[in-house]
Length: 133
Image 1 (tube, helix red, strand yellow):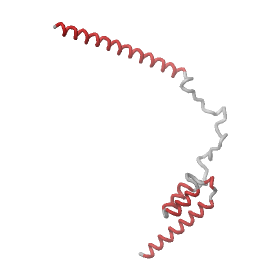
Image 2 (cartoon, rainbow, N blue to C red):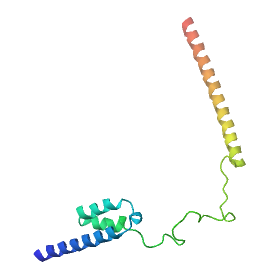
Image 3 (cartoon, helix red, strand yellow):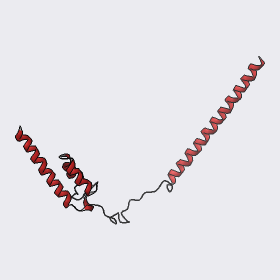
Image 4 (cartoon, rainbow, N blue to C red):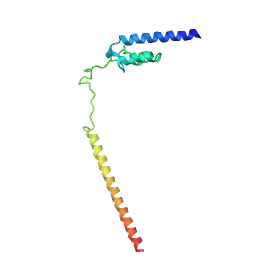
């Protein structure tokens, strides 16, 4: 049992030393998610979880992202390949549907107002009849 604990201790020590050396030798601008100093403290204070987290979340990625590689400014679509999209304010079909919906809403509101007026008049008429009786 003591040998197993000794093995775990050696693995933890090696993992911490390798992660610390890797963290300290990495350029400041290449470190991900946190400043380099924070990663050093995490690796030292939270062993063995800290070194594992450094390798997963803090270490710079060496491989390129995606098939085309990492995006750099100016690598957008050439003008002839740029997808053409029309904003809602410039789309005549959208503007027609908005005006149609607005007209429908105004008509519905006018019907509701007329129905409310009719019900109020009916209620007043009933109140007057109840007073007479």
